[in-house]
Image 1: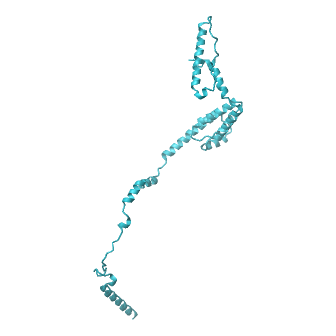
Image 2 (image 1 turned 60 degrees about the horizontal axis):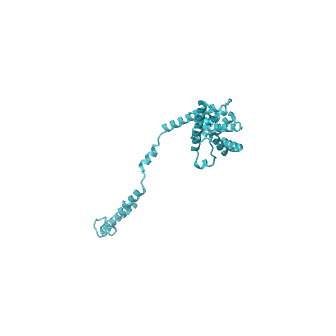
Image 3 (image 1 turned 30 degrees about the horizontal axis):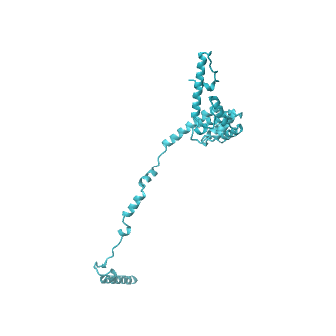
Length: 256
């Protein structure tokens, strides 16, 4: 649709009476593209920021004004990019392919700022920033004589990521269940505090259940008559005396 025609080409001359129909068509087409480009650029900006730029009738000039306002020092930008490249660490959660592509984007920006980052150096930086799960891959790479480029590193790291995901899935799938823990949870259900309080209120106290009623009248366990205890029972005393006499007679016979 040639909406970016005004950004790619220069403004054509204003048509005059002697201009041809093709020249007039090119002029109208360029101005239409210029108006659409200005509307799109201004609509993508916040109202607060839009007032800080001078009005321009040319979309290409308006982009130059924006570039001048957001221009940064090349040295400062280089330092920020170098810091980002050396401090990036792969957390093992996001995709390893996307992580390596982010580091490649930082290296590309440094190359544009005339700070050359070779593929060999970038591969070593990426390998050192990988998660500890890739330790086996690091040891394997250090033992090789040949060197990998960035594209080979992406393919190998992606395949290693898939392998670790499959191992984790198989481990979780065939891991035996802990029946002891499930049994203890089944025998000891969670009781809310309200239920505990209600149960303590309704349950009878152990003192009331096991309280002994003392009889007011004593009963002898020897003669089974009420009114006296066993130690005061006359029949028990007579029986006790007979038992002592028998023991004394038995001892005398043994001495003879």
